[in-house]
Length: 339
Image (cartoon, rainbow, N blue to C red; front, side, top):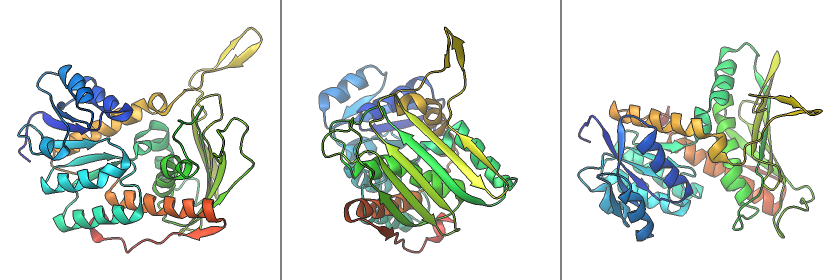
């Protein structure tokens, strides 16, 4: 990549997440500009490109990546399209930020790992944005000090007001619990070795045939246990919480008590309604960190190995959901490229 004062970014996929990243790079992030947008819906891409000076609309990711004013790619297309886009980015030697999931399954994720290994250096960062959330960052820093002693358990809660109409029971694991999979590995510094998914009676608010909520238990190679309550039709808002239980104390994040009001015989606060609102700062911080590192010629943040590990854990979780019982997680040996 030719170094530029301003990084030209091709945003691939302009749905809800991609459009928000276009806005973020155009209005919030410094050191980068949106030089291309890509979407299979040509009219949608053209409408978005028309709002940004010097931005070109494409329907083909490879064409955008080959453009002279594109220095890096941000992949926000649906998960099944990620592998092809990543491999194209590697062919053009472009640094890339890929939204999670890296790919929808462990086999394709491993192919991406192997392709990056052949390059001999990291080119991709995976969009596990919770690592950039201020509360998660504080919890990670506290655990690393050792003040609380060895982590024994990690309790996670992940709630959505309502699930989209296309959501399936397995997507509660592959699309939602994928985040807890990554933060469990990141916070504890452990690999997840086994997954058990338990199925309480579905909520009356869940659509027909949707197993919601679910209760997921992770076992780790460091001897810790982590659980995840995933409830995507809770009805009242979007909540993400975590509590680390350690040998000498506990630490909890996500209570959302930035402001508590007292009025008319009631006390309380507000609950965010979706992930874009709850993690807006984390997304800003994530993309800015990616841009800064890319301009320095570096790749930091979650790696494609992290994406592969999350995919393998989620696959085991889906097997546990559908077949019942405890499922072990099978990972290949971690390549030296990923530490």
